Image 1 (cartoon, rainbow, N blue to C red):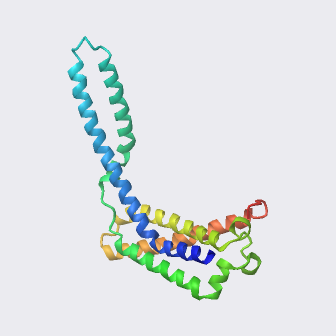
Image 2 (image 1 turned 45 degrees about the horizontal axis):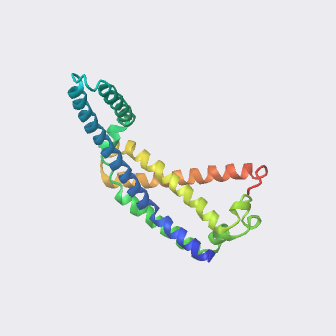
Image 3 (image 1 turned 90 degrees about the vertical axis):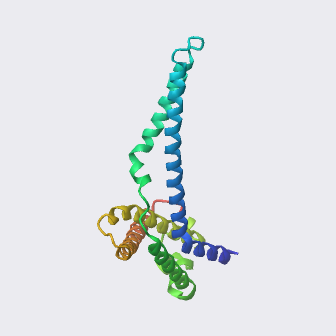
Length: 208
């Protein structure tokens, strides 16, 4: 059963780039839709305020409408600083996502075919000398989840940085290759930094 869970998690890792792309696109669409919805709501509320401005039979209505306008404008301001980001198309990273997925597939093959890699994930902590692989990280499933967290963190940082890189590299293929290299650099940095931190606090934390 544990092997099936590990297989599912490793296969999920290969799909992480495409899952992240889908989430980012849906988030941008929802923000854009909310931005336009608030604009329309404010315009309709202002029409209602003008309509009831001279209606003395309902004196409280303008104040209530004014309060709703203020609330809508406040929410609109929270979206406005990122208006340019929402309106700007995502960088063309399709080739990068494919490269990253292929790399994840190779990592999965390494895990299932290379004994040293399998020992690192499934072996005892004193055997692979990763001493924080105890407690909550004693199982191979928890270790694979930890690697997936590093992968997702690296991917999100890479996508954010790609918006800045796109301004300097206009051609699509070099841009995707540079993004792929950046992703691997960030993945190594995050993995080494997090592992060093976990190793450092290992003697003081009872969870691993």
